[in-house]
Amino acid sequence: MITMSACKCRLHSVILVAFWLCLLSAGVFSLTGLHPAVAGETTSAAAAGSPKGGDYLIGAGDVLEIHVWREPDISRTVRVRPDGKISLPLADDIKASQSTLVQLKRRITKALAAYVDQPSVYVMLQENRSKKIHIIGKVNAPGEYVLESDTTVLQAIATARGFNEWAKKDDIVILRKDPQGETLIEFDYDRVVSGKDIKQNILLKSGDVIIVP
Image (tube, rainbow, N blue to C red; front, top):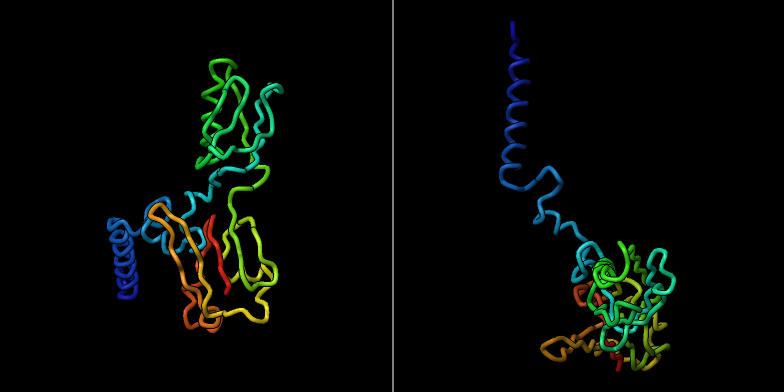
């Protein structure tokens, strides 16, 4: 004999299962995790504009360690030239700039395959020299700074040891170059730190120039 309580329990279970099936069929969830549209909302804003998976993009000036297993005459430390290429014995010139370390590894492996039997290549970033910003004007430590990680305008100002006595904190601008030309981005320090316009505290990109009048 099935009691009324048991019927209600079974009905509740059926409704719950149906609810989850509806979500799955709608694509909100998948067996591998959140649907991309949902997962994107949980991704840190600091990763915006970065290569998928946080892979480092090589740039001119970077120092790379190229190791070819059991091939000491080919293995070496190289600096990416201003034209974005590196040179290796047998492989000659290889494009490195705007590639990930994995992409460059594959490119070198393919280039060496004609000369080395099943080359095993390892590419490591030894020095980041391509991701730089400049902070000029009325800060205590103006100069060139390497972007070792995602950095906001406030963090950059702190790295430059803050403002000097005469800085105009409400007239700061970030000069940014892009394919369309140069863009001026306004930054009002007082409005940002007071929480009135926190969106101004953007992530900096390589090549940005912070100007503090």
